[in-house]
Length: 249
Image 1 (cartoon, helix red, strand yellow):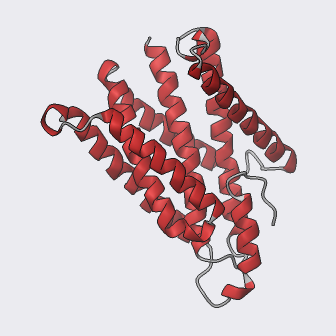
Image 2 (cartoon, helix red, strand yellow):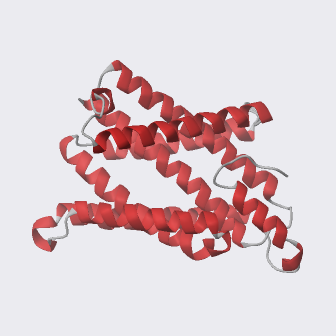
C-alpha cells in the first residue's frame, strides 16, 4: 500500500522495512488508532483547559498566555519533527506534541474569545462538525480517495505551505498584506479555501488508517497515525478560529 500523505509517507516506508522483524508483536489496526487518537485528543483538551484557566487567572498566577503559546509552539514543532523523522518515538513524542498543542490552542482561543465572546465554542463545534462530515463522506464512499484526488490535495497543501512561508517572511519585514488580518472578501475567501484543503486532508488520514491497518505494521504506527490525524485537526481548528474572528470584525 502506498501513501502520498506528507506526514505519513516517511513513517510508512520505515515501518514497512521493520514489518517482518516485528512479527508476533502488536500491529497497527483501525481500533488501535482510534484509541490512541482519543487519548491524544484528551491530552490536547487537558493542556488547553490549563492554558485557558491560566489566561483568566493571570492576575493571580502571573503566567502570561504569550509564554504558554511560545512554549506550546516551540515544543510542539520539536515533538512533531521528532515524530515524523523517528516514527518509532510516536508513543512518547505524539503525547508531548498533544500536550504542547493544548497549551498553544488554549492560550490562543482564550485571547480570541476575550474580544469575541462565544467564538471558542463555535470553533470547537464547527471543527467537530467538519470532522464527522468528512468521516461520513469517506465511510459511505460519497467521496472516494482516488490517485487524482490524492494528488490534488497534496499539491494544494504544498501550495498553502509555501503561501504560509511567504507571508511569514513578509511579516518579518513589516510587509504583510492587509488581507491576511482584515475581514475583506479576499481574506475571508482565502480562509475558506484553506479550511477546505484542511478538511480534505482528513480524507487522506482516513484512507491511510484504513489501508495501513491489517498490513502487519508495527504497533507504534497506531500512535503515528493518530498523531497525523491530530495535526490535521489542529490545523483545521486554527483556520476555523481565524475565519470566525474575521467574520466577527
